[in-house]
Image (cartoon, rainbow, N blue to C red; front, side):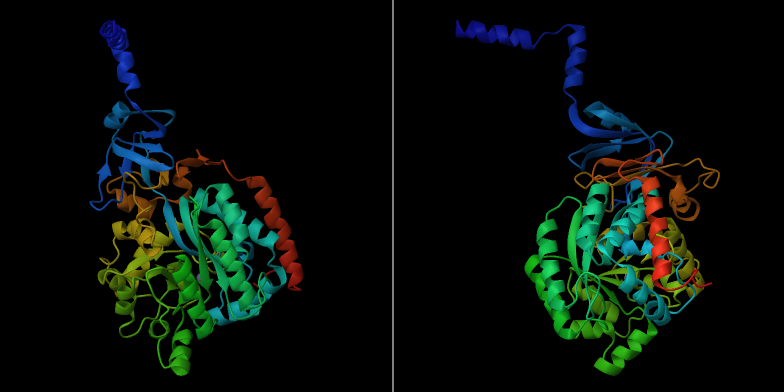
Length: 474
Ligand SMILES: [Zn+2]
């Protein structure tokens, strides 16, 4: 009797009509959240594979498969399918250094050197205007600009980072967010003790979040005492939080450091035991002697900001040498007040051209290397290369779908040349972060663009009034 029942069940299960065979095939496909099908996939994996007519399967925010479209279609099924035939599919761009709310100071004071720009304009404007509301409005504006330009991860240093984290996670964008620690009273914290208490709470609140990596951000070795730098390092050791900081940005910083501490900023930081493989150091324009090998030995990530360094005439960081020596180097815009945008396409184009003209050698920083700086190398500089920076099975699904037949792009001969020298931010058509679509066919899905514009106009009036000027410096 029992055998008969089993045989009956097997017969039912094995129903072999031609129609149900097709059904079986369909149901044997694995179900995922999202399929991106068609187009040329620029993976940025170790082999730098470029897959023509490719496909991606995404589930739970991660890439579960990548390969030829036919193979992906055969193996996977999903309710949401994106037709990307004729497009370029690349990893999302990584902006390694920002002060995101400073978009509200965009164009307030230009054409000055760093010290005048900071002390006469930016610090007073910040002292009078930075509040949690200011930070939230600026963050939403910066996020909208970054999504439109294909940035899917950014690394920030500012005040009220907890509010920045809320706005960023709500918009569905990935970020390493460093709460500033600096030895003078600032908008959110008046003392080092207050700042450290804020960081403690901030890091424990966001740790383990899918999108937000909370960090501590001692501003720079010339604005934070040795004791407070050591405390920041100890905090990072205890919590695993990354350390975001500025190092060796100007010649003056270097000279002052040599005079006061008898060492370059890098050598000084190493001497006090500050550097390790959780440190993300912006700039490093003026490394001396063995500074580059110290940074390499300690596993420090360096973020190069070519347009900001050019605009403030800070100098040219020896990036080709850093790359040759195997340093983790990424690319950033810096705050929009010194750039004046958050556009990684411009930064890629600039990094290649700046180093060619500076070295007199057109072979340094190829288009492919420039694209690496904004993707996989950028991920290394943020110590996140196991999660992001390339399109590979198991990694986070952060990717761009980019037009490839705009007038400024055609005809296409070399994909990296096309991406770095010809593609513009407005060619980014759709953006997916952690498997979620945040821009579709140029429409922002997680942010209210008209409201963002109205808020920016309101803050412009407030800022001008607070500085007692009728119009920005000309
Ligand atoms: Zn900066």
